[in-house]
Length: 209
Length: 209
DNA sequence: TTAAAAATACCCAAAAATCAGTAGAAAAAA
DNA sequence: TTTTTTCTACTGATTTTTGGGTATTTTTAA
Image 1: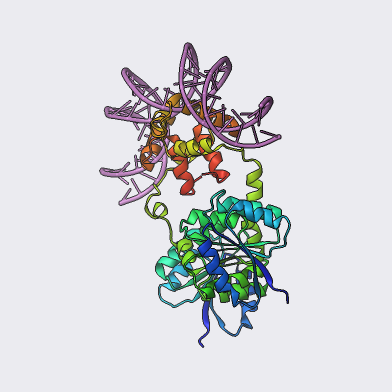
Image 2 (image 1 turned 120 degrees about the vertical axis):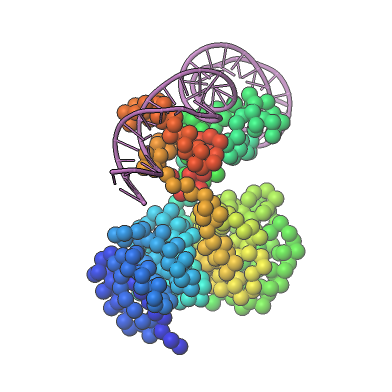
């Protein structure tokens, strides 16, 4: 079985060296290079085959999330594992959406890295424990500040967010536009916001929409 | 090693029976019951220990995403695997955020189900192949629909989303409110929407805000 | 069954947003 | 340096929203 050609992309050369050392003992992995910028890795993969890329989010020229997309565009079969210190869920989700096969924090154990690599080469998506916690956790936070909306209110909120005016909503629901105005008013009050722009924003943050 | 106590929640009894049959041969799994509603499973777990719940999204009384949260609130240690036909990424992401440990489509193979269960009991999050494709595939919105915004437009968009009116924004940026109106108009045009509600919604979906 | 919550509908007035344009100045790109 | 884009600002008319209320009916829950 041929070794997995692995590239490391990180703006800190020390991190690259550390990873190289850690992976030196892995039987099925061969580190083909360390790269400090998005530019570098993109130009490398245009001429060389790479099976796995360990990718940081913070890079000098381009952010790792977008780089993900570009790498995948250049080479679909290359597996990307994010190795980052960023703990925001939005970033994690974005990378996965952009084609990454996993996300690990930099303090992950070698075991976790090994496991994620093996899962990833099988076509799975794999997160380190700490990342799973992040993904699973914030729902509580967001749920607490969430006002309880009635069925009608949720329905109308969605229609407002779709850009419909009170008149239109009234027509579609066979209600008086004045009723919709009342619901709109109540929504704005429940969320403690000033207008629909802020309302839609808040509803989005609380994942109601 | 004790068997994993497994509950099946689905509004179609046939699906429950099918799963029971499929899992009958599994050495480490014992199906403790099939439940047709959120109510049923919630009342069951209040008095019985359950290790794994195979959960459908479509249920008569409550949707599976919210049920996830409620189950986790009632019993943190219970592992939830979603078994659904819904293929929208937003639903998949939502369940994971609400504490599910995996998501499989109903046409998944038993092998996949087995693999996901074993990953899940180890504390990992696991998706079936088809689901990974959905997660990885960038949505139409994201591929084409993101308009290029100027610095000023981004700035003003954020302020609009914060619920500020043109007057207020104008004051804060030392610009005429009429200028802000123009920017607002351009934003609405660039996004191809009708008003700020839809604008904020679109900006959120495209992760600009 | 009775109380509470939700859904419905209205009034008035002020504030804000939307539509449909034009247009000069400044900054960035070619 | 020229061209293009961005940023700025305006007119004027119309529509919509927002803020302050009230009030009846229908559901839902205790």
